Length: 458
Ligand code: SF4
View 1 (tube, protein in one colour):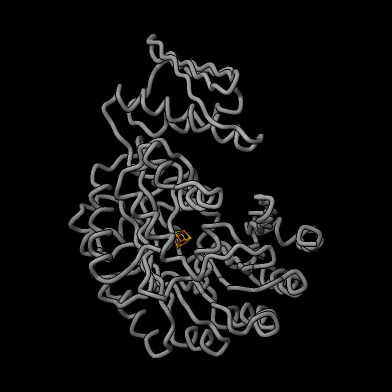
View 2 (tube, rainbow, N blue to C red; view 1 turned 90 degrees about the vertical axis):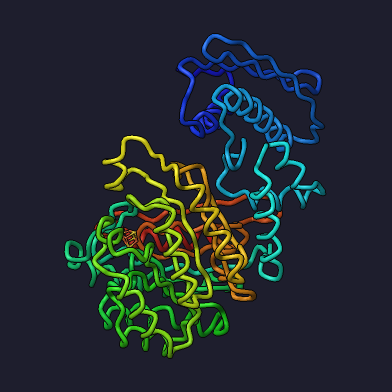
């Protein structure tokens, strides 16, 4: 049971509790602020703890920041000592450590000092410093900057770990004609809201689950924005799973100016691929690379650490094989199970003793192969409290990924389940507009969505 007299801190403290495998049965918390002192009193399974922390409070924002920080750190320290467990990111529970680092620096503070205080592991502090360095020249805070995202929520089959709204295309194909018509309308209207276009990203789902004809229709819809707003911008298609690659689709991408594709194997182990409900094999992955080679796209590859029954050795082979493909970017995700994922329903407790080893293995192989970490994010329910890290060959970082993770540019997101973001950098404010997830509702509401989104970006 958990109670606190401070509503603002309730979820923050629960996030700290969730970091640990073992949890207190009874936890009470009380907070007060008096004459520059933050008081946090805890009772953990009958044992009482009292803390007083001082901090310079300049404004309301700073007050909230310190209120949150002291309470979380104190609880983390109690639980860490009680259960003899230290977390890779210490008391930090937020999903964007790099954003926090930037904020500290913008306020003239050393982020390393804060991360050390929050007991973040040294290698993770180094990781954040390396990412900030790799983002030099890409990271840009300008209110008018924008990225365009086009959502294709269709997949060949549903993967066991997936919580995304996508459904196997065999069950949703009948929505396609109306969905594509709705996308056309949205794209036509979106042009007036695009500011300084930095990148375009057609994502999924699996965009290559579409037929050549349907894919071309999407590319055609985007063409006026691409040509008129910034014909030199990065243009990515998350082609997706190797089993749906065709020469014709790749040629279309080239014809329409696409510069980057994603080939997402997740694992190079045939056994794992079968267990997670994919229909392709390791051989299909290489086939997809061979097919794409002549078009000269930059390639992003996704791997997941912690998939069903994988050992660090199996995972190591996947990382090595991904490097051998020569991909420009390799992102290593740690398994994260949300509701909606079949694996979550089958997994009582999300734990994988191997996960930290896998993360260490990937860092070792990728850095020795000349890749640099260039973006990262954490997720709730992530195995082992680790993180997802995107690695890049020098000067090949994906602008879209940086903008999305650091939330420095508007995101004009089109399609079902697309979440548009408007970023007001100077006020430190982000507003969001989410479109309907369900295909049928999205199609029915598209005119209303267009109107609302136009106002949203006004
Ligand atoms: S390909 Fe991606 S979006 Fe599609 S079911 Fe698998 S994990 Fe989900």
